[in-house]
Image (cartoon, rainbow, N blue to C red; front, side, top):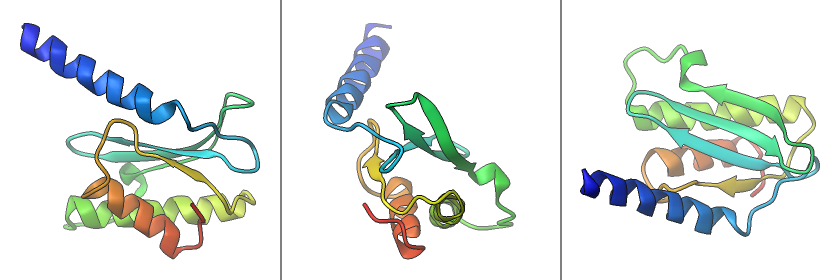
Length: 118
């Protein structure tokens, strides 16, 4: 039981350390990423107003039999398209407590390919 507690504590510390220098505004919101075992979620957040400006998830995709990494790339592209419709072109990427590889990296690369600037 103590091992699970320490693992979660380390994750929270990594997340807080990453988040300490990141602050989103209306002009340059924070792109926050969450990854579960089955799906991935991304949202653009304005910390100055405490509002979510744009959100997307892999639930919205009609992907069929794609890998999770391919779905994550498509999620980044979908989020970028929604952001452009909302008039947002620059964001700050917040990876949370996750390493920048795999699905997290795919979301970032998909968003960059459709014109979001980090």
